[in-house]
Length: 264
Image 1 (cartoon, helix red, strand yellow):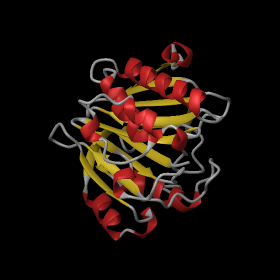
Image 2 (tube, helix red, strand yellow; image 1 turned 180 degrees about the vertical axis):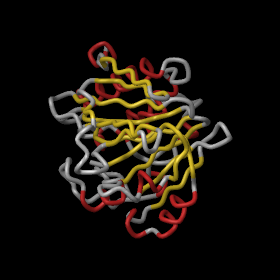
Image 3 (cartoon, helix red, strand yellow; image 1 turned 90 degrees about the horizontal axis):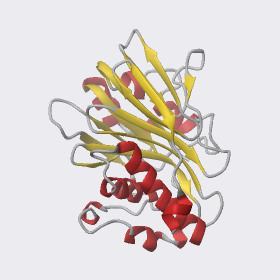
Image 4 (tube, rainbow, N blue to C red; image 1 turned 90 degrees about the vertical axis):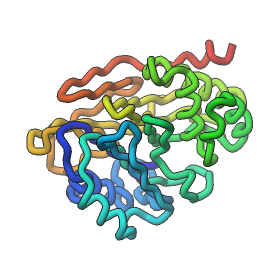
């Protein structure tokens, strides 16, 4: 499992979420506490939005704690909306193209979790990516495939529906050709205007997801694990939920992909 953190609000230095908190994302890369893999050292990445519509993107295969460029960039870059991720591979190679976040046009996307037995049906998953989006398939992860499938399902105009349809198709494939647990996922993605997140599993063990508004930062962090162990006001997102964050506003609705219908 991986760990990730995202932020939306008043512009802040990226280090205020990624590096400086007591349980920052960098700290979680070698000391995660709410997942089965405390070390997430198979690469890292971040996507941030500025004055242009498309996000900046920086990814590398080094562990987050050992990259001096990451420390320098996060100390000098300010953004009102960014995503950051530390990776623990569930089977695919440690390569830059497999590091999150992924970006296509104005959209950025990152994922934590797994689709059970993915190696057994990777070719079939690739076949679900339409030709118009397949040129963006640079790596080999289930995460990137899910992102491209969601884009093809209409992410631009229906983020919740597109992600539900893509997840349902992937889950149907996992049930037909893979192994249990078929789906466990949290994901965050953005079009540069809003931050979206979801928490879902085909069993009762969905990966953790929290959010918190900070008056000091003037924004909201959405994370795999709370950034400070002594802060008691982090709100846990319920399993099977889809979230929209915009300004101080939070919308949480049920997220229930219909894998049976997708398989029909």
